[in-house]
Length: 106
Image (cartoon, rainbow, N blue to C red; front, side, top):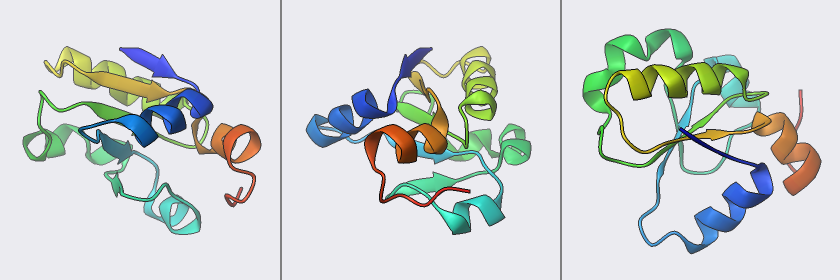
């Protein structure tokens, strides 16, 4: 598993020829408050039963509020055979603080 800071992730997304899946693993109420454009919500508790809707070969950037839940999901996905997993270090809180101050915080 790789980790990217929010600035690294934004730069990567701007130049990626094949966009990765932005997998948001927070709760629906959190996602409604704020999320990255084009992200897909699958709450952490639903990941085990949602493996069949994810492509193990696709690059997946896992996102949460502070980077803790996303790291746990990223490790779980790796153990399930997913090969190209990235954790967003610091989560959306860091994104709002360091990368895009216009992003809502909670």
